[in-house]
Structure formats: structure tokens, C-alpha cells
Image (cartoon, rainbow, N blue to C red):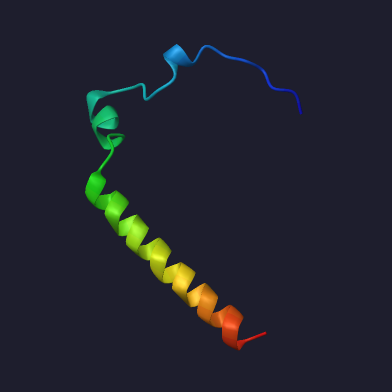
Length: 52
């Protein structure tokens, strides 16, 4: 696979204002994701420890 450079200055969300609004970063969702990720990691560690 060869890397093909591109002009990233044009990268981003295009389209209607509603679509652009949906693409905005939501810090609250980020916290929820982090919390879920920690729970999954804990469960995975538990499973690895007791079910070898």
C-alpha cells in the first residue's frame, strides 16, 4: 500500500449547516465513551484473569 499525499486543508465536514452542527465535538459524549472504555477494560481483565 502506498501513501498518497493529499491537501488536508480542505478536509472536514461539508454540507448543510445542520450536518455541520451534528459533526461538532461533544465533550459529554467523550466522557461517556471514556467511562464505557474503562468498564470494558475492567471486564476484559477479569475475564483474562479467571478464564484462562
